[in-house]
Image 1: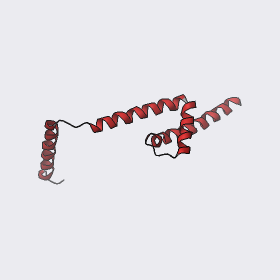
Image 2: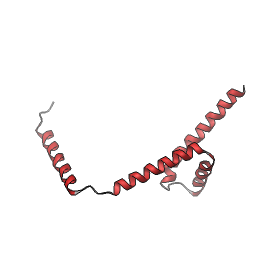
Image 3: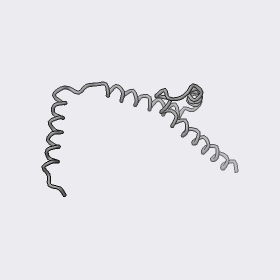
Image 4: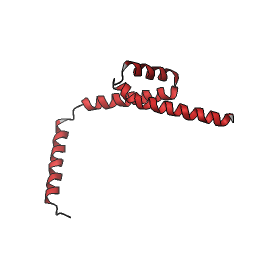
Length: 97
């Protein structure tokens, strides 16, 4: 019987972690009120698996933000524009199906 009780506790913990993992996205974007931020911080302080997932999401967000601020070289931008025009022409010229 203790085994079943342990499984129930694991499912409850999983559900609690799932809730916090969903809130982490809003936490990272500073979209939670102070009370929710405190709850998330408290959970992260006591739950290593969630802390690891939080660190991963924070790292991915930082990499994406850094990548989005980079500007493609002018010759690459021009090649992309030319290719887009070529595809547009191909679409306009190709017979309807």
